[in-house]
Length: 369
Ligand code: SAH
Ligand code: SF4
Image (cartoon, rainbow, N blue to C red; front, side, top):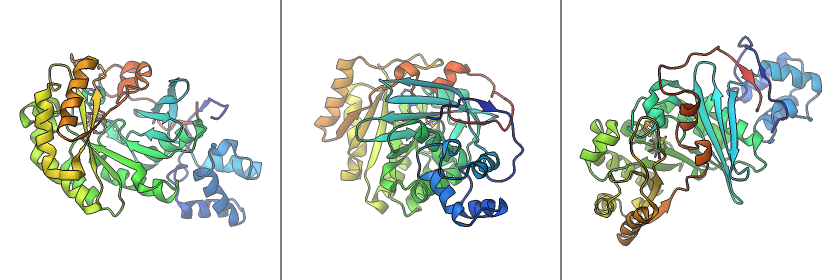
């Protein structure tokens, strides 16, 4: 992590941002600065393959580096950074100037995963979700998504091995930026598609688009209910694309790439955690065969505008066992980082309670805090 935590004032935009610039932009920029051509490749390497910020680089000449720092602005300014889990989980709340977004880095011995936001807020209003409770501010651009990964990389000792699109927002409702970020995480950061996971609430047109890309990106679909009546209540977008359509799109996505789909199910005590609902969920997934046998259970994290709570551990176990009895593979997401509000949209809620979209100064430029 960079030693400096200062937030500098706005800079006039002079071109693409640091993680929006492509290789051609870097060639043009280094040439404009009178540097030899090989510096462009060196700069690309510093930005994408070294694990420290451009500001801390020691391979480029100091004067050139200072010029590049000034001409390749960052788009995210840290608002808060919190660490827990003996330093293994870190969560940022960033300001983009006109909105706040979150990123979480989770490290274990074998992997370092970054959970990125794709939208500031979310328009889809799932009742139990803090992000949904606040509404949509705007889509993030691809460079804002990529910068979240790189800033997390700069803060962690390990190389980032996985990126999950499971932070604030619905990635498939912001398809152009999500697609570009997925492409550049492969081509620039060198992460294989299998280690990239897109989580969707069941945004069917986006699932069809994802099915058409050639990369075997992992798909996760958030279900939360085994029938349309309950899902209509918890996930309002179910009224537009009901379970039948969501599962057909998930099946098509899985088939075209031969990749299994994970189904996420947030468990809410007394609402969707009855063993009979587990059996109904298993029946619902049966037509997907081996492509749809994995359910990831997420005990509800409390949010301000939803009265529910997570089931107690024995009840959670009964639900998990009922799924397992039906032949499903069940995992339970550790509520890792709950003490730093590391669930979807919760750090933002803690800092800014739900209300009208916050408008702050524009164009802040900052380094890792
Ligand atoms: N919009 C996408 C991705 C972001 S949400 C989606 O809905 O899948 C990522 C996951 O966090 C989803 O499965 C979502 O249902 C879950 N989630 C949101 N709020 C939660 C909460 N308060 N407790 C537990 N899980 C939550
Ligand atoms: Fe949006 Fe996902 Fe939250 Fe639903 S759960 S409101 S789709 S971020």
